[in-house]
Length: 131
Image (cartoon, rainbow, N blue to C red; front, side, top):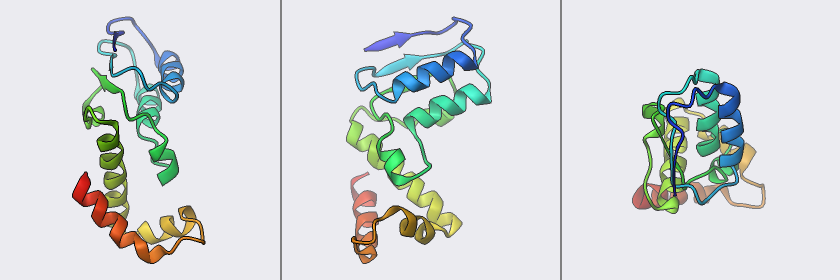
């Protein structure tokens, strides 16, 4: 399903409503928002709907089925397979955290204590291999 909303003079308030709808929508595959009046606030809301990096769970629960076009390069990371999208996004988040040297802090907060953190390198290797 493709929805072309280009050139509709949508603003950040509209983007917030669209972002809220995207959080629960897994039918829409392409959303064209080219030529609207979106600022950083609206773009951030849309990006959060498809790539919420506040935690691994939030990222995993993000919309992985919809490609937003006409809003800039940050939205271009997309594959037709939702599982591949999820894997790319998780891998990229973990890579960013690794580069910043703070994966351990995030893992301690996000992985329940009943799980063995020693499995994390194997999880990272699997993400790398299959993403």
